[in-house]
Length: 111
Image (tube, rainbow, N blue to C red):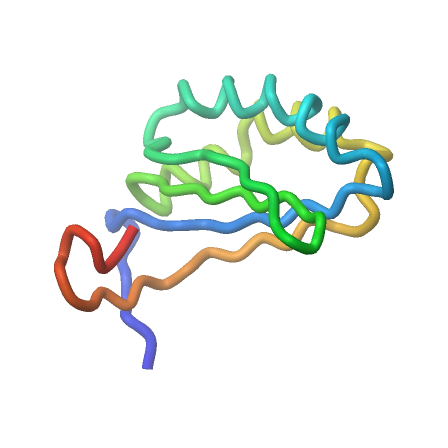
């Protein structure tokens, strides 16, 4: 069973980017302007990239609400990010909106 959320609940997203061979640093550099722009967007609580063991780059996002996340998805920063990443990715980015399953301590059991 998954927890239900509504449009005003915080929402967590993961986006996995798959750089072409040897392009990891170029992908990170291409992402920097867009990440800086997103950090200034309304509702952005977390927007951070991490190296994964398989060579992909994982972005973890947290937004104040699905409505603000949707506005981000339609915004200029995402257009810029997609433009800057053209030709640097081996396959399409995998994006997932995650449903929380709060457990344990409320402050530590969910993002």
